[in-house]
Image 1 (tube, helix red, strand yellow):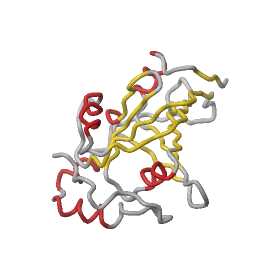
Image 2 (tube, helix red, strand yellow):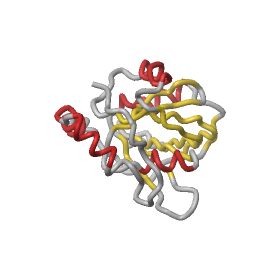
Image 3 (cartoon, rainbow, N blue to C red):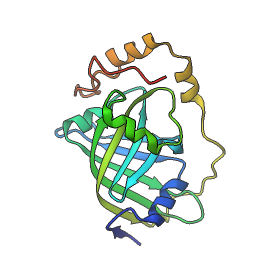
Length: 189
């Protein structure tokens, strides 16, 4: 049953590394909508140390996570096993957005095996609580493969398309919170 951990030890790192998908949950300080996003590409997640994790945030349809982190920093990450060994692991913490043009991004990117096209930022989470749960009701699923669609889409996009995404869909959250700044850098090529 449920257990709380004092740090992200080697067995937790191994469990996290085996998951092909993870989920990110954030919410605004007042009112608004809770955001829950699935994240794929298992190589976009890294355990930095026993209390710090990060993931590469790729351009997408909205900017909810970034807007909520700018608002209050609260974030929960969930890893869920779909194999015969059931388990759910949640990392609760405070997150921040590191832009690709920030000095810190250079050191963060060394934790990832590869950089995907369309990187909007890195999200770094200072983990404050680590807890698992049984996951007994989670169904079994078998991974066929990672879906290459987002990478393929981003590889084809001209810089003008990202400028439009920053100015329109990524400028504000659906609740009107600030998202990306107008001077947000284009994805690294």
